[in-house]
Image (cartoon, rainbow, N blue to C red; front, side, top):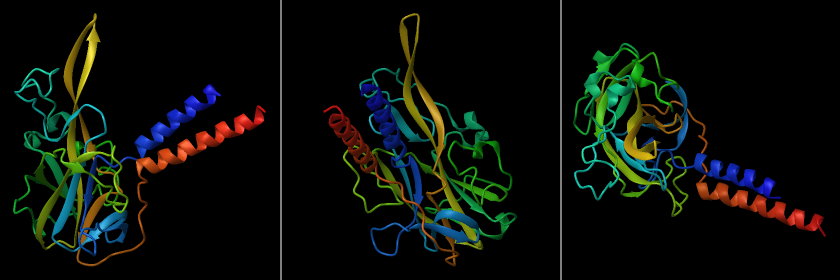
Length: 287
């Protein structure tokens, strides 16, 4: 029985982790105050699971993983001067910057990046500001750094378009973060905490604009050599899932619902119920 239970519990734990709130999300206001726009299908541009808005507000969220050693979500990490905050790291220890992940050096020193994708060949036809700020970088070429482990690198309408990038800073650990795709479910106590930033967009001249978010996620790690443990900062590049992005446009452009990400607690309760049924069945068979 132990041989049966251990693999099942491992699978349940993996499923629970897989269903957690995404590290990064982009959302838009819903039809009523305090709600998020649903993720639906769009015909122009053609894509699935995107929140559609014609308004001037975006939400971007960064969520820290539960009970792990993540230090920052945003740009390059520099450790605190106060050694009591991260006692294993020497003050001033740094993580990797954007150029370590294929971005050109223009991006170094910046925080999390909001990528705005517009139709191919239209960069000069319109304008876009985020919180009143112009983009830090624009390009008509799809560059190496735009490829990340999650989308935004490999879903429509990307690549093959034009791009603008905006620095939106770092995400702090302030509040429990809901899943924008299923915000009606209350976050369980063990859910990720982070920050939701409200961004004001001003635009003219574009038929549509697609928004994704990039960030550098830095965490404390260590290695052992000849019995001596050394601590360092490990940095990874992350992006929002393709199911958690936003398309701005002046028409509604489509329909159809997206698939919500189930809450971690729901998956785990279902799994523990299966374990209970297995134990009950084995007990009956042993009588």
